[in-house]
Image (cartoon, rainbow, N blue to C red; front, side):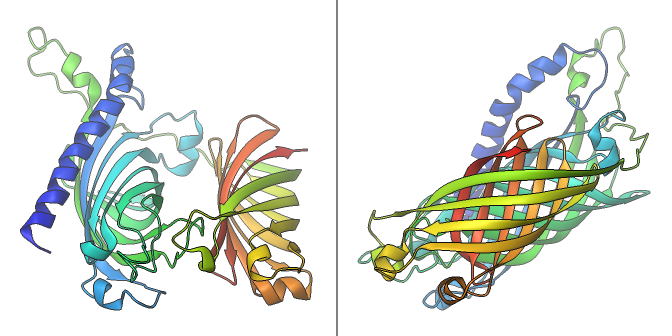
Length: 390
């Protein structure tokens, strides 16, 4: 990677820091109006570098990806600390927004993508100065150089300038001093558009990361230095009152309908797309406030088969099992299913997966965005829809 590319990444990171501070400035004003410490007061700013290699499933980018990837991200977040809220049952996670900039391979073929995303950091274990964490992050990426039949025919991984960004980090935090932490871990990064456009082999990157986190108290700048010249507020909250997960033992019936747009390989490089639909009826059993399992029936309609299998049926029926991980109003869902007839197995493979995130607007109404896969791990389409809990 030449000096120009390094400078471009550095400039993007500075821009990311500036935008993050601008976007969080409104929250800082609100925090100044509070006299008692809260999660709004305890902030964090971190910078992390990544390096690793590609897990490539395409055919024509082997040489472009042979040098692996390097990237930098900047995060701004809040450290939760309320013992009476849901966070105390999850060992007080931190959450916020982040900015990503990376060199992922030959920029003439792939571009130099950036991403803007939200993250949450779940502590798995706290012991003295150390903490093990699991950090999922998701957002929107941009500045890819997509496939073009004449200008960029080798890029079979990415066919759109904007794509989904997803990162999952298993890492550790080591407390260095009053304000600073050392961060390190192993993470997986994924870019794709969910077959909205073709080709869409996607990019999967596995590697190591290391960085630094600065912890601070936003109320420090409101201390009257004339009256209290040596007053230092805590830069971190005192995490106390870890509540146990509360048993629920509750059953619910969920009905969900979603739609999306996809493109066939024959239509790559064009604007031609097809509509797809998903509907499910499922039973959810919640063991406690954090975990639940699901089982249900699925109906799918894939209008893109009109182009690849003219005259054939385009509807499918299936069944699935799943696990729900719940916090706040959000649920991270992972489901695996299969089709109930030979047509589904022939055209869609033996099984499908559905990773999704669900947001509860109310006790009965929810929004869910997920990815239905094809023949295992290949993207079939992105589902976006509304559901009700009966």
